[in-house]
Length: 59
Image 1 (cartoon, rainbow, N blue to C red):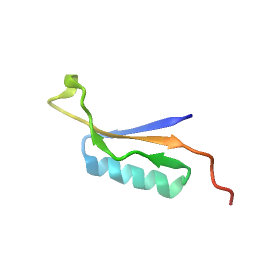
Image 2 (cartoon, rainbow, N blue to C red):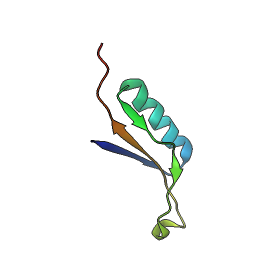
Image 3 (cartoon, helix red, strand yellow):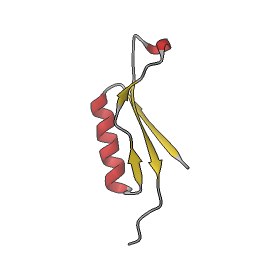
Image 4 (spheres, rainbow, N blue to C red):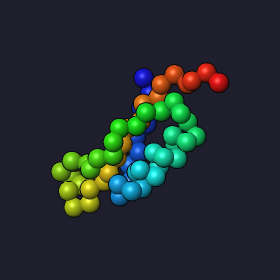
């Protein structure tokens, strides 16, 4: 399995990146964007989403 992590300062930027990836590559499933929980970055939390590559569809 191959995973991709999208990370940004805002949830809107993560959603835009997911939209871009899915329009170009239909073989990636992304999780819902979420706020990071690492206590090290509590003052500047990041938002992220993981994408998992699946078998490409036959065209």
